Each structure stands twice: as structure tokens, then as C-alpha cells.
Length: 302
Image (cartoon, rainbow, N blue to C red):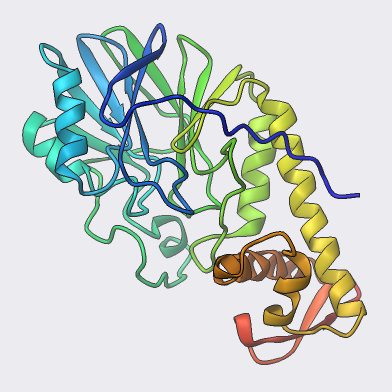
């Protein structure tokens, strides 16, 4: 029986409108809907007076103007970046030009893998480098808000969540979303890292998640448990495919993603590759020939 993920997709909003979603949190959604962004990028504003902005979004002047209009009379003191995909960090340049606020992030695109000597291909915001490099457990505070940095590699190697301590609210970027699972695309994406980062969240006492895309998640641990079980189920599907004589990822995807539109198969293949690499690490599969998406995979002895 397939794992039941408690998806949350209902969301009432208006593009360009800064909306208060809790006592210390406001949100404005960029008009960049799509198969990977849902309705668009949700930019969050923390505190009042001196505020932090999380994920200014794409390089979209209309979205930046909406943020600034909603903050008239206030000061943006910090710009926090969960990760460097093109719907999250490129807006930093325009927002920083208008506010002079410093940017905070784990590092440039691929930073977590570059530290390990792994080359990451282009595909993210290659122009972004944070003014202030942050690490797991760091505390950032100003005015009437404070956040704890929670390092969650997996979706990308530089993915950072931010916990608003005053509300026990975790801004999860694309690590955990309510409307969909996350794409894990090697080499920057890493399934083993992703699963460890999910386990890390289970140790925390956050009461609500605010993803960059879609509505909040108000039963976070149930959601995280379901995500872990879903990824474990995908690994079992791969094992079953190989046992039935299906040895290449391109042939596994239609079997594993029967309810997924065909135009999403390339993205699905990247996630299958991420799961396959995790199985390789555990010795449950072996590579008979080829590599990556073109590899021929067989059952191992792990």
C-alpha cells in the first residue's frame, strides 16, 4: 500500500499583497507559478520595525516593489536565503540595492558539495554569495525577532531552514513542503543527506512549518514521517524493478510514477537517480556498467 502523504494545497492569496499570516510573520507571493513553484515563491517577512526577509524570490522587480511597498516606514535589516535555486535567491540583488541589508546564507550554489570536493554543474543562482556565511545552530537576531539556523542539505547542498524562536515556526524552503515532495537532483542534491535532514527535524519542537511554496504545515512531524516513509518506498520500488529485470532508470520511471504527467519524467528520473545513489552507498544495488542516468543497475548484497 502506498504511503499516504497528508498534502496541503488550499491557499487563498493575492499576488503582490503583503499578508499577515501570524503575529510575527507576513508573506507576499511572487507571480511565478509553475510545476516546481506551485502558485509561486512565498517571501516571508519577520518582525516589525527592523525586519528580516526570507527568500526574496526570482529576479522580478514587481515582486521586490511589492515587498518594499508593504514595508513602507520599516527597515529591512537582514535578507535570509534558504538556498540558491532561481526562484529563491536572485531577488536579493534588487532588494539589497533598495535596502542595503546584508544577505545571510550557507554559501554560494553547491557550497556543501564543493567542501567535499564534488563538482556541481550550473543550474542554480551562480551569482549569489552571502555577505554573511551562516552555519547550523547560529542565531540571528534584531529588534523583536530572532532565528536559529537549521542546516538541512539534501534538496541542495547549501539548504538552510530558519526557525523563528518567538513562534516555534520553521521556514523550510523546499526541504519540506505541503503541496508536493521535493526534487532531489544529484550531484548537488543528495538523498542520504536529505533523509538525515528529515530525521533532524524530528528531533525539534517546531509547531508549524512555513515552506517557500504553498500553505503552512501545522502537523509537521506527521508530515516528515510520511516523507521519510515515501522515500523508503521509492527505494523498495527500485529494488522491485531490478528484481523484475528493469535495470535502467529511464525504464523505471514510467513504472514508479504512473500518476505523474510525462513532462515531469526528467525531474522524476533525477530523484530516482538520487535514491539509486543512496542504495549504492548502502550496498543494496551495484552498478554493472555505465554511470548515472545511463547506468545498468543490479541487486547487491547489502
